[in-house]
View 1 (cartoon, helix red, strand yellow):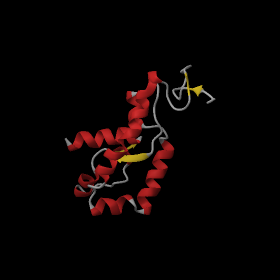
View 2: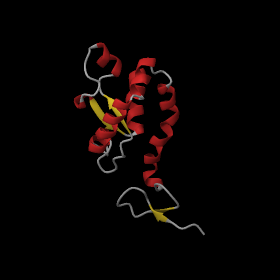
View 3: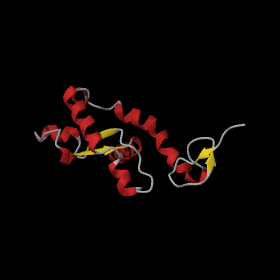
Length: 127
């Protein structure tokens, strides 16, 4: 017999084998966006790839996520169930930041996001 645990949504009394109950199953959907993210990732320029793997960006990104451990978009749009931030997003795209000779490390242009929110932003831009 499988042991049942409370639904992953804080405060939900429903018991499940794992994850979310049927009522809150929509919170499982953002994890299914990985394929969309891989497609977007394959379109990055050589310059942006070089930037995102640089030690300076990794340090800034790590520091920013420490300051913002919860997805900033989820906090505004889904305050009852915000997700953890997993990456730092440039609000103004990196290509424009570089073109305009601005600092890519400016915190005013950064946003800590979960993978689902990040994918939604980029999928909207591509349309």
